[in-house]
Length: 312
Image (cartoon, rainbow, N blue to C red):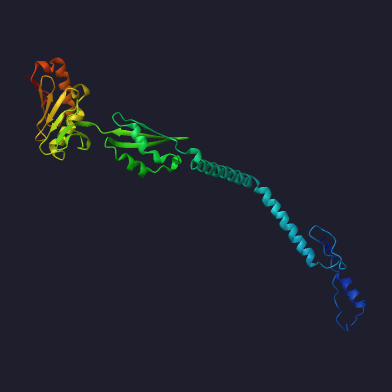
């Protein structure tokens, strides 16, 4: 809206002209107050200078309002989808990967627990003295069982009947093989009992019993039996001996843990071992000494002090 132009300044008139004008101009009395008329109002315009709405337009209907609201919501959803498209694609990718993994796991488990992976053969490995055929026959009830469903308690109950088995482990080899790895007990000698001669290991577990001494096994003489400290010392000594010395032993005796004595066959030479301490060093010294001076030429090897060996 333009501002009105300022009125031009009135020119000053001389006093004589003012007095003459006032004397000539008639005085008109006012009978009533003359109303001051306001200028006509300017036409209303819209935000962009548009023409004012025509009063003759139809009123806004509720249906039009709802249609405009729906259009606005559709436009808003379209914008949201446009801005979240990458996130939705990433989410769909992760869901697809997860679903694939779940299906793969379920399929694998279903196949593993099905007859497709049933046991058809039991194989025993790691046994030298153990009768593998007898062990396989004892585990025959596991045939036809899916590999993941092998009953460990049933396998243990079957292997307990074999004294030579010290420990074992099961290994499944798909699609149809069950491998039983056994660790045998190491016999140390024969103990004379009422039933005959019982083969025992270092823990005193009876492995077998025969009426006469089995060849190649030394006879163990210990007054306190397999539960005594003397037998424990004998077990430690026997486990430390190399095969070259074990093959020559005919007897082992001890009355206390500190007086273990070995007897070598042929010449009946004795080995004074003493306690089970430093058994590895004593075994090495004895093997070296026997190589230098065979048992046929001596009657006694005293290795109770491995740093000072006595040979007679």
